[in-house]
Image 1 (cartoon, one colour):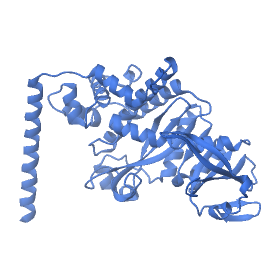
Image 2 (cartoon, rainbow, N blue to C red):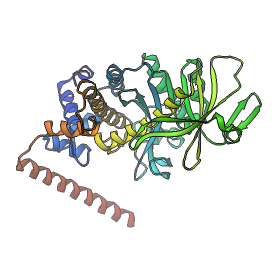
Image 3 (tube, rainbow, N blue to C red):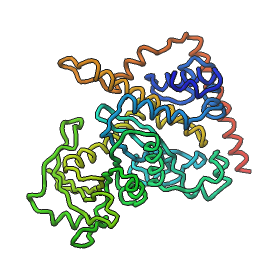
Length: 413
């Protein structure tokens, strides 16, 4: 908290943000302004809502502090910057960025809000260091709707790969030590991120679809067609990293691609084959200098750490539990949730480094750190406080019900 204290000019929001983050790190079953305010001992959620909506502070500056904090403790010159998006299912259409769109969270088209995140994946741990809300054209092309949600005037539509490229460039411009970038097919099939990384001479391993066109010395083919021409002896059994059930072994093959005339580096198509089902996956790869197949496999395996980051951030620090509707409030909530998760990730990594794991125990994880930390900071409130909150909730719900009844009556007329 001392690292971000200078971002608040007044003591009140500085204290409030400490209470909010303590609540995010608690074991509350649900984390929103109501529950966090009750956890902090407030009589109403007004203070928490003011912090997220109207108080004067810069979420972008705290995002930079998070990046510096994560890099300081997880520093790795071979780190991978992983880009991916996640969606939060929503009701209604008033929440910023919400519309019917595909989200991997549900695996189908749903009414959802989607955001792109950048994760710093190092040997010792991983945590999100940047975020960007995806704003569909239905919002950017409707100034009145955008203004009602607090979206800045003149915000232009940007694709998910464009948002990812901006975050990667922001991290690299800040001196973030990272040699590679990884992402799924959304980013591999779109040339925008590839072009930006190539000109920065930053390596990438980006997943592509089976029909992705690949140019080789023999001509231009779809990725799945090239895979059928890989000789049996070219496949190698390698691990893409440790998973929950042990090492993730697959068969891998590398196909050289025709080098563009600018000769900025080396390109290849990486093919992954499931040893049990035979299912194939493809990655478009670039590196400024030649690297062995094992290094490309290592980077491809690191892409899964973004899923672990999403799972931990949502399950432990309430990344997806916000009940805010406006542009500023969304950025503030997710930034503080990222900060809470970064604390857990860094603390777990530091404990594993400084204290050898006793026999018969697994190393400390972010989940266990959260349980221990919650036990240390959990406040104990008296019965009167709990009764006041019960009264406030019932009063608020009564007002809401009355408003709904009045609206229904007006609609019938």
